[in-house]
Image 1 (cartoon, rainbow, N blue to C red):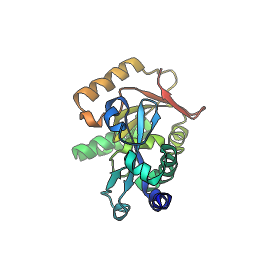
Image 2: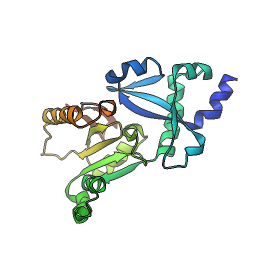
Image 3: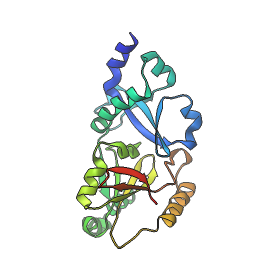
Image 4: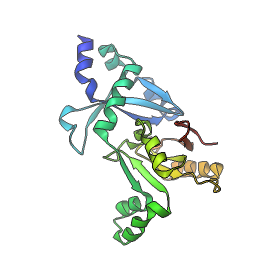
Amino acid sequence: MANEQFNNVKDLIVYKVINHDRNKELLSTVPYVNYLDLAIVFYRIIPETVDSKEKKAVLITNAQAKLWETTPSELMLAASGNTQRIMGVKIRGIFSTIKEYMGDFSMFEISKKEESEIPLYVVSNSISYYGAAVLLYKDLLKAIAAKLKSDIYIIPCSIHEIIVVKSIKGCEIDTASLREMIDHVNRTNIPEDEVLSSNLYYYSKDTNVLSYAN
């Protein structure tokens, strides 16, 4: 019966990413998978909201996983096939994002030029909620790197979104200073429960691996 229950809901299971060390108490109560300094946790989308812009979901606990007789690996397998399909992806230039948040349409001309001139992009899911999980989408970083024809840096803005920065040869990024900036923003501008990481990530298009930036 338990496996049948899991089979009935497995197409509705999605993941999100949170900071591992900041959520140890929560992680003692839920199944999760480690990823870099993050933890991947799992939710079940309420069926009636799958096609809604305001999706509703229920966190999967250890008790629920035990009832379903399922493991974190099985949950990850199910969520990997569902999250991108259900939650989608949204990629915007940095100025377009600022314009959207500020409602400043005077930035329209700037935002039209940004893609070719300033290779910074804000990436999230279609509802901009728990959107940093796009880090895990199959081939997404590979596709972005291929479009930019370069390796990319990933700045973890919050649990809701990330910033992708093109790596330009001959123009090395001061990764130590950037990590300090990320940490400062986390401490001063991001709600504590929405902080994703103070690390800077680096994706290599040759190895197709996401790692910590040196």
